[in-house]
Image (cartoon, one colour):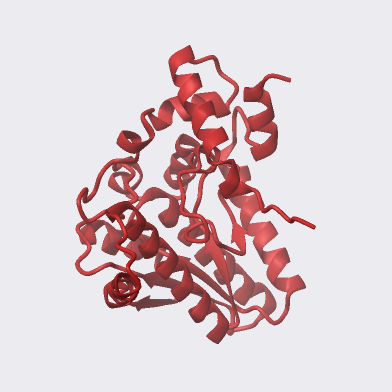
Length: 268
């Protein structure tokens, strides 16, 4: 089996989707999970204002809306977390995403002080972290906050990583990839856009350039600049289409180099 097919099989991606079916299946499976784990009543998602968290948040809100009605249980809730580092540069997009999702509850927790405190502690130990590593500190602090909220709210942390990010390792180990459930892991970027379009999301939210926005020295840097390949090309690769050899080599190198992020090694 060629590597492209192996990666597609590993991530369980599809060449084509029907948005209405993908939406319904995710909501149905998430409801089943909550009904099976009766102690869990809250879904927790960090909302950044980007495509992936907007889609995930909307799916979660629809899920709890339906559960409350079907189970006649008012305790089910969706909690959207705003976790800026200082002042968020795309604050307008984040507010618009929140308005579109219409969460049951919104909590805003600024992570800047915690990240700076961690950086200072490392400095005192003689470790001066780079801007890139500090970006990972931000991602891990955000995940830490999500789990603290989940623990106090009988909640489960829902991730926002799509198939293109997972395949290329474009996530922080034990940061945004440290989650309980991921609703969109089998969807590539353009498939996620199709779901948002079906859900009547404002166009500007799913057409904006994706950015992790973790580095102080490169604010709002597009993901594609870091990856060295367009998401549209990664999507085509994950759909089993033929792409240029140079692009294929980049994607597969990213896949191999990030293998440690997807695998846990248990040594006896």
